[in-house]
Every structure is written in C-alpha cells, then in structure tokens.
Image (tube, one colour):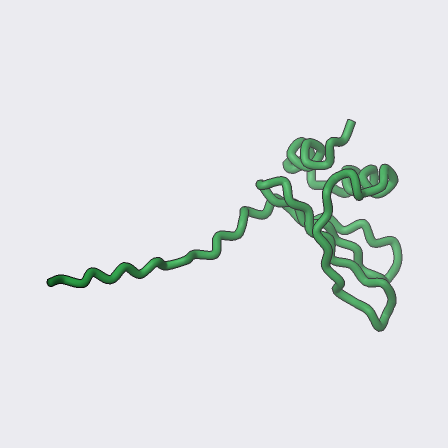
Length: 89
C-alpha cells in the first residue's frame, strides 16, 4: 500500500502596481496607488497623531475634485490606465 502525500504551496501573488500619485496639499499625506486589477489603495494622514491610514476604494468613492487632482498629478505614461480605472470622463 502506497500513501501519496500532496502538499500545496500557496503563493501570495500581488497584482502589479501601475503607479502611486500624491494629491497632498498640506503636510498631511494623501497617496493613491493604482493596480492592474483595477484596485485602488489610499494611504493618508487624518492628522499628526493618525498617520498612514490605509483604505481600499472603488472609483465611485472618490470625489470628482480628487479625481481631477489625481489625473493632473498622474505621470503621462500612466494617465490612460488611471483614467480607465477611475471611470474618468
């Protein structure tokens, strides 16, 4: 009688990052990272005692004003991809 053992190696594959864009207007951080799977990660500071908070967003959760700032600050080579992810006009 033979016993065959199977071991499954689980790999944590992170989607490829497109770019990170800062829209901070003060000394408080506010950065958005865009991924190829259309995920959006925001890392921001509420105030000096609450820094580097992270949230995952859907495009509809980002205001038109912030979308405008993101597109304005986006490197030209990533602009088309970021506009698609944001569902930007």
